[in-house]
Image (cartoon, rainbow, N blue to C red; front, side, top):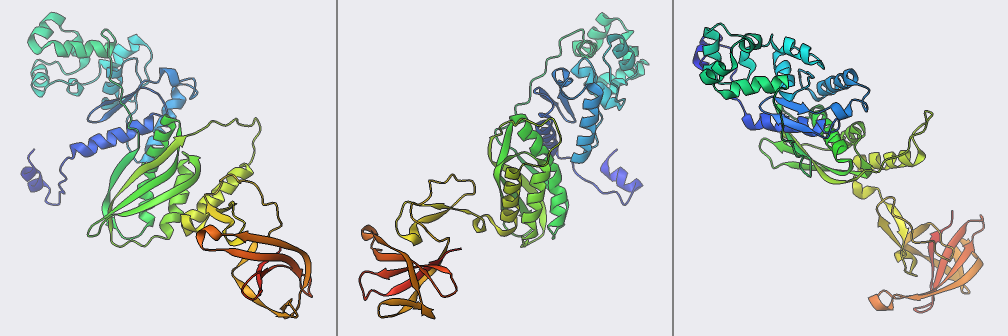
Length: 425
C-alpha cells in the first residue's frame, strides 16, 4: 500500500526509506566474514550470500556442524539469517527465502521439497507470477506439471531455466565475490551516543567481520583505524596498534575497550567506521597435543598492547643501544621487540641522571655529603667534536660510605669539575 494509506491506518507508523547501498554494504560485510569458511563466496542481491561448502565439510566436522557454526556466528554479528543447504545455489536460495531451513543432499528429496515453495519466491516478474496464480499455478510443483514448451512460449524461457537450475538440470555458475585488499566498513548507529561504552557494542559486529576477513586473507592486523563520526564536529580518529599480527576478535575488542576508556568524545557519535590500516601475513603455529597455558612470549606482548592502549603508544617503548661513546646519546627509544645490536663493552649503569649532578671536591677528591672512594677507572671518552657537543671526560666507578656504586666523571677541561652521571643497581 501507499505510505499515506499505511499512516492513515497506523498514525504512529515510523517511515524509513530503503537504502539499497546500505543493503549492498551489509551483504559485502557478511561475504567478507564468510570467507573464513570457504574460498568460494557469491552474492545474490538483495538478501542472499551463497557459500560453496563441499570442500569445507571435513574441516568443520560435517554439514550439520558447519551450519550450526554459521548460525551462532551470524547471531553474534547481529543478523537474523535463514540457512539452507542444497545441491544447487538456486535451490539453496529458494529454500532460505521460504524459511524452510532444510538440509538436502538427495536429488529426489530436493524436487519434493522445492515443489512446496511458492512461485512468488522465484526471480520472475510480478506479471508472470500473477498470470500463473490466475491459472491456479501457485507452487513450483504446480509449475512442473505444465508442458515445458507451452510454459516457455507463454511466460518466457527464463522461467523454465530457473526451475532447471534449481533442480540441477542446467549448470548454475556463480561469479565469485572478490574481497578488497583492505577491510573497511561503516555502521550508522540507531541513535547518537555520548558515552564510549555503547560504541564497543556497535563495533562488535564490525570487529567480527574483520576477524573473518583476516582469516580469509590468512593475515593478521597490526594497526586498526577507528573513525567516529559526530553530529556537529569533525570525525575523531582512533589508531589501535598491535605489537604482533593478530586476528583474534576478543583480543582486538579488549584493546579497543582500553583505548576508548581514555577517550573524551567532543560530540555525540552518530556513526562509526573500522579500517584495517596495516596487515601482515600471519604465520601458522604448531599446537600442543596437551592443553597448555599461553606462552610467556604471548603474555609479554599482551601486556605491552594493554599498556599502549591505556597510556598511548608513545608512552610504552623499548630501549636499544646506539653506537655512540657519549653515555647520554648511547641509547634510543624503539618499538618493542626490536632486536638488540649488542651490549656495550664497558660497564654502564642503567640509571643515568639528566643532566649530570655537580659534585663538590676537596683536594681534587669528589664528595657527595662524604668523600667518595674511586673503585675503578679512569675510562676516557673523547667524542662529539663533529656535532658541536664535544665530551672530554674521565669516568670512574666510585663508592660512598653506604656501599652504593656510583658512576662519576671529571671534565678534562674547564676546571676539571666532578659530576655524578649514574647509579648502579
